Image 1 (cartoon, rainbow, N blue to C red):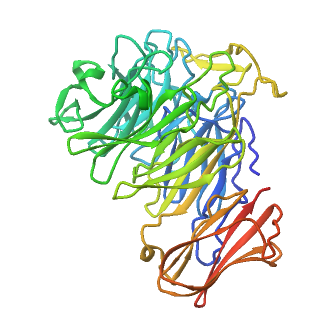
Image 2 (cartoon, one colour):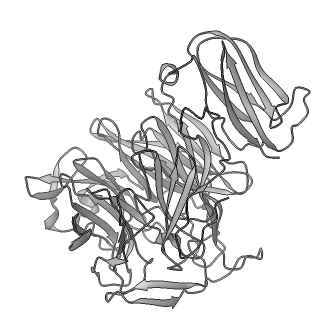
Image 3 (cartoon, one colour):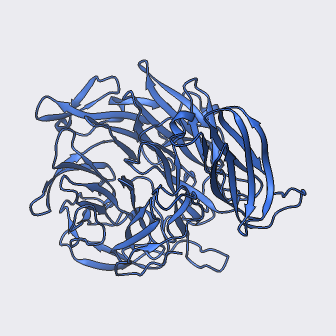
Length: 578
């Protein structure tokens, strides 16, 4: 188990994965299955990129139960994990986690802020060395203060299309509206110069929530009228792209010019309406909240969001712009209610478990769905060319919350992955703690957080989120030939894993022949023979129900799945939990 020190860097440690592929030492391969990025971490879903890949390293940011803001790294090849404290006891609020960009010289900058704290500016730190999170420069500030009670929240750094060292920083300002600035980075000094440009989206009422996607020559914006508990909201879409050589403008999904950026903030009525809350309220409810946006391989925008037929029934939607219209599909008709404890003061009825799009392939989505045990399961849903969807459970079957998934940006093309929070979640902050803030004068001040109206009744007073951050990694299965590089056998990761009732075991054969698939315990004793017969070529599936060959329930523990085919053999670990 990874143990993090607070207030100092943690040296790299070898983390024993719950699941790994058994591979030859001479052939480095990405570890697959479920691993833990941190034993203590949480995030909201309106600051991104919060996770990204560079080669075979996954980087991510989170905030701990005590309010430490951390940047972490996980090596996909050897399982090493590392974490660095960007701030200590900054604020135990899941909104305070960092978002990252990598500059032209390979340095990372982490952006963060205190959630809705008056008189604050956006903060950031830039790493001292390229491709490294072990050494960071001092805390700096954008110096931009937007008047109002909303403070500075939700940092989203994105490269300006067509520029090398210019970045947009999107955030919610003190006026409770999405604002934006342009930052110029100097590779020679590693310094940033920021200029506030104004409101990005403007409304008469409400505080719009926005998700962003970088599409190379454009930035996609998917947003709401406001917070669903305050403002009944539609889902809207627009893009930022070039207007001539020097200017930027807002556009609709079909490429129609709306107006230049310097004409002022975008109004919802000027954008595409992806979801009209009044179109079919009996089916979808009359409110919504945005979760994700991405571009498919044809450049079409895809938007993921939740609607609310009732407070206990959150629906997940997948909408794509195609043929001049938005095709809105209900992906999950009933994902359950809020993952938050709505008996607390300031109840959060609209905190769905969450839905994430894979930026490289938004037909692959990850959804969090409430289960009968009071927790939530994380599932992968894949949309096929014929419009059908298939699902696979990644983690669940317990009373733990598996929620707020995110696919690391720039993941390897041949490897699927998703990160998420797993544990217990009731509220977005833990109290009481010191809340650190930086004022316009960059003075660090300790302020007490307000007490919540009530506390937990299970003995863990004022601990409202206690979550780990998990990562699931698996080879992309597009066809049998894609997976059979050396032999004609490929054994894929069991799903779900760990499991309580049954686990599906998928394997690919390049040609027909006799196959055996067996389960062994850690001592090498045969537990169960699942397959021992001739099987035709293709992607095949068998199921282990946790019984041995005598029909007796196997005990909890680690087991090995071994597949053999015409002289080739592969192994996978699977964990049974009773």
